[in-house]
Length: 383
Ligand SMILES: *Cc1c(COP(=O)(O)O)cnc(C)c1O
Image (cartoon, rainbow, N blue to C red):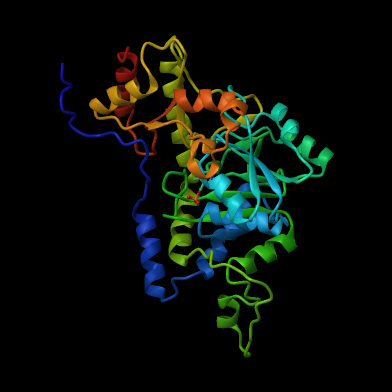
């Protein structure tokens, strides 16, 4: 039997922009100042306030944010940084950009987050830091990770790429519960500026160095020079980067931040609808939120049980035949060629099991309940 041609395709994700974002971009274009300037500074202030962190530093992506966070933490060539393999590859790439070596730690199969019980056996004399990923918006167990880290003298940095608005122990991610948290504004995330990233921190010195490093290590910002009544000459005291966000992006970010409570509420409501309908399927596992965590549902990921009547790829194809896009679940970085090493397959059993059996279902702000019911129907009939 051939599947009927679907009328339209339901995407897995789609950003939501309105007239306010359009207006904000136009205003910046017409102002004549499009690079990092007043809008970026305002976006940083509002973002810091939202997450409850004293400082926020905007950059060009979360990968750039993670790289700078590692650099200002003093991570250097020869160091090892622990992180999950079950994550987007940028987590490990940022560690390599800092000259260090990622050491993968297995995950907890209930939450898909790093398993604190697997951390200590991965530590060597070269371990400097733990990069804790909040998996598709579900906070990692920061208390357990923090306890191990402080006992062993390690730094903790949060890869909060997906986690804007997520809560750990009733406080938003990015407080920071640790030293620094790094966020992404890529269109696949909850709040988007096209491309963009942010580091939040409670340390004034750290924030100041991040601000310099993102703009070629220049001691005086463009904005300061521009608004100064006297001649100011900058200097460059170390080798920096060009990791600047533009005012065009920040203007969009400011509008999206205003809309964030509404966007989070919509995502959580769609996720709850999925779970209430899909939890009765005997071959499917719906997302689990521990009592001290609140996800932002950046993605809604389900897992097929070992005895499922079809494979993950078969389910994805069945959905695609009916006009529904899905994506494989979170990747396993250790399986990609730059990171392949003989013993990872053996040392990461939970990561392997989860990456092979999970898929991400459509969930986006403007998804209608009718569209979602159609997805649910197609899954319920898939076996
Ligand atoms: C998306 C993502 C990143 C990279 O973010 P960019 O802004 O695209 O650089 C890093 N880590 C995780 C866990 C992500 O999901």
